[in-house]
Image (tube, rainbow, N blue to C red; front, side, top):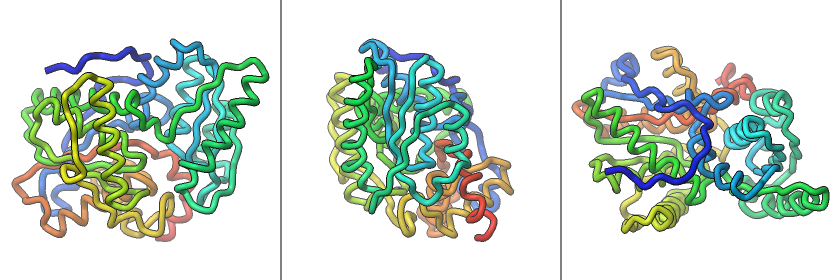
Length: 334
């Protein structure tokens, strides 16, 4: 079965690699662990947002958009991917970012300087305000840009709207094809859950393909029920966009919220240990905000016996490695 294709622009290099991590599996005593390397997607420093942006920005081009506006934290991976895509498509990028833990000119902030992004840093009381306060700031900015003759477009947080989520529904096809070509049978897919679109896309794609895998989200932002409801909403809305007779309920979605720590963007000791473990066994670099915490979740679930040694797990590497430089103190001192 093949999903109906939506218009897209060419931003990434597909398929991204999928391969085994035998030394990590040995270090943890099983199960077999595989990795999907969307950190190698080819846009700037890579990342899972590239798949979403290919469809979102195709729509933007059809609308005659010349200026993109987005939000997130100072070290937002989505903001960086969007800015890089804007450069590739000849658009301008404006970012309204909350300062977070590391607003200094390092990591993704340094890359914005190189890319020429127009960045405004804002103080907010809580990271959840990027869904409320910051959209107001973006709307004000859009009005200012229109008065200057620009045609701006505001992209929702993380690109987690049906058109963006569809990119990861298509990724499920890519993953299934690679597993078939390599003769791999997996039972679980595990990934970071932030704004929820990547998990929603994979859940929808695998359900459409009737692939019997369980997609497990490790929340880095929201409590379990909120994260599950977000995934369900995005699955159902994206299914409508694609004309699929598929509907999900929260009971069908798996999200763990045990690994958030003190909050979004704040590293945990377990997350830092997971970053170092994967680097020292497989020479693959994760980040402290997303993939480090999701890998910490995988490590803990393995140690708790959630996965048997006879099973196989696919870990989705969603990128973010540039943020390691901004978090150098935490990575050094933990």
